[in-house]
Image (cartoon, rainbow, N blue to C red; front, side, top):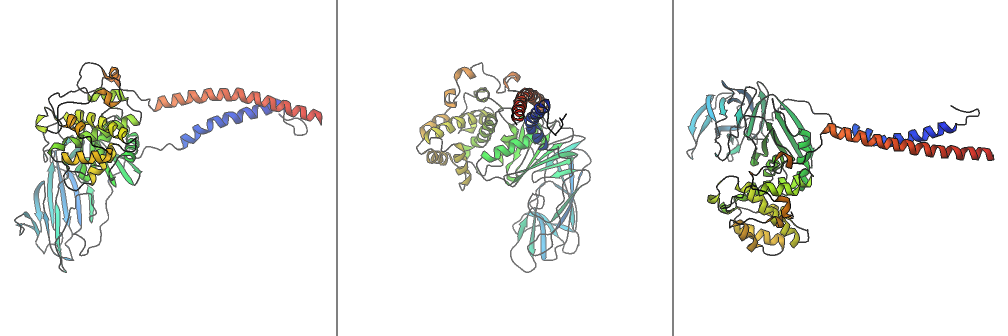
Length: 503
């Protein structure tokens, strides 16, 4: 209420000040809510527009994709536009099963390679290629397959084929791969729905989430009936965060799939095409952190000689675990306990024939690299670390040998670590926990199967728990603000009253 003359009453001043304090306390909550992104809606795979024909362009193609007579088979019908600016073109170096052609003649090149030659007359030569779950057999190291099918979806290897064309104005043969994720004049359509990757071809309904970060585009495709243990937006956050700290040239476009059973547990990466998949159970709080592990493979440009084969999975495992620790998702002791959970006492990293299991580089490898990283940091006062080793291996021309690795490590560390490397890479010995910066008592316990017990994994609060905690916090602050506001308001009113009385 107001007094005559427009003066504000003491209780009113107190209330206004209190409300101002409370409103200020709640302002950050409103701002945070306004920045929350809505979950992206599902959308079909986009189709690339056709490019104009020229001597520099390969024959454009329309690709239609559908499932075959059974869920495990996928058919691709390729219809080419006859090249106006080419004397001839072939389809070569193909995988999958070519089940029919029109306007192509089975032939051999001058080098004796089999292929399909355009007959030179058909305006729209075409072919149908089949690929299946069994088209690319796995190595047998893992239980389960890298590809799978259900009534709702199918994941198969993308057929590989090359188009070779000879420009009409002369010159040399040119080659391009129309089904890989490179620039090629093509239009892709799915009879149902799906995503065509350079290595993975998915057919079925899906949801897609996209994030752009540091010049990269991350795409996460969630298969029909999949229930990801990690919400795709959280996975995208983790990938973007990991990318900023990882060495090596970042790929422009990363494609990830989330798949349920019957795909095998774990993950699988096709590094050359910057694609991977993870099982729906993959969690960021797991020491193995499959999301980051498979992504690291897309940053590995090196090739490795036999004595260095362990480094591919070892480095992916180390950087994945390191990302989990840095992001506060898992304790260092938990990672150490997991990596030491399988001893593989008779295994030597540099000698693959001694590996009793394909898991040796997944456990022993990250353990050695973790200790090596700490030695490099100490030797360089924290100026360099394992990322510098990884980066120099990526930039080396030709396969990286063990001798190359020793030289690179010495160059990065500023001194030779050959004796240390010999001990832990070329013998059966493994680093002790003191080299990992973890107290022995934190990882003591009987040998396990390399996996954390459910109680060992830190449980991260979910969205509802964060909301509940936030409301409790801001409610408490609001009450404090109200009390302070009333006190300040009373003092302001008293001062105003005294000032008025003196006038």
